[in-house]
Length: 99
Image 1 (cartoon, one colour):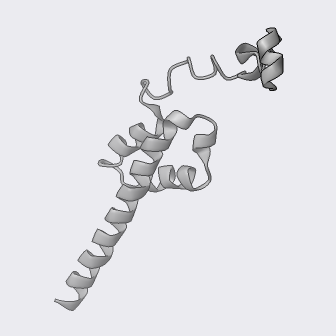
Image 2 (cartoon, rainbow, N blue to C red):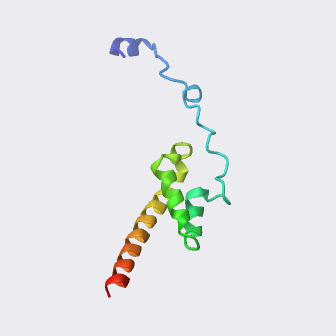
Image 3 (tube, rainbow, N blue to C red):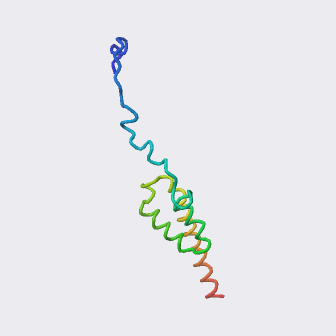
């Protein structure tokens, strides 16, 4: 904007926030699975059945969190936990076989 236009009091509306940001109410509804989201639900259930960690890792790797960014933390936690569990299984299996 020119300084001269600003001095005359001519202002230009850059954007109307409500028209541009169509996602204002998109994430108002609660997350599925008791409000904690699929990621954290799978994380907790994974201690009973570790296969759910791998299922949630699959969702994370294929960017399920793009549908709802609030899911990203839980799905990432599952991916890290599945990796740690896999390494522990490999080490445990190697120790069992060679000792």
